Image (tube, rainbow, N blue to C red; front, side):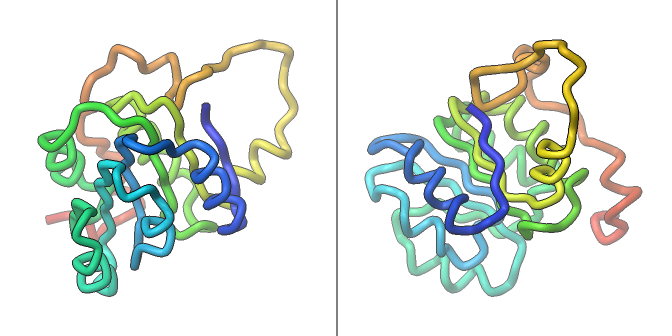
Length: 171
C-alpha cells in the first residue's frame, strides 16, 4: 500500500496504522525524530536526514540507526542497502510541501530497491496532483509499497536528473 498525505498528523497516523511491532522501517527525512519516536521500540529503524539539527537529536535515540546524509545521494542509498536489503515500511517526509518531482524520484529509488510492504509519503504537491488528476480508465496499480513496474530493477543507477535541480549535490 502507498499512502500520501500532507498534514503531519495524518502522516503520523497513517504510519502508526501500518508499522507493526518487529517491522523494519526506513525513514527518509526524519529531521529531529518527531515521527521516529512514535515507532515501536522493537522495530529495526534506519533513519536518514541531512539537517544539522538531526545529528544530536537522533543520537539520543540509541535504538535508531541514524545516517546523516542527503537521501538523494547514491552513497546514502548504498549505505542503507549495506545494512538491510528490504523493509516493511518506507516513510518519506522531505519537507512536506516542496519539490514533488524530487520526492517522487526518492520514492522510486528507495521503493524499487527495498520493496516495502507499505510506503507513506508526506508531500503536498504529490497529494494535490493525485487529487486533481482524472483517470483515463486504465487500471494500473500496485497493492504493495512500491510500483509493480519496478519490481525487478534492483538498486537503480545514480539518477543524473538530480544534478539539474540540486547543484549543491555536485562534488
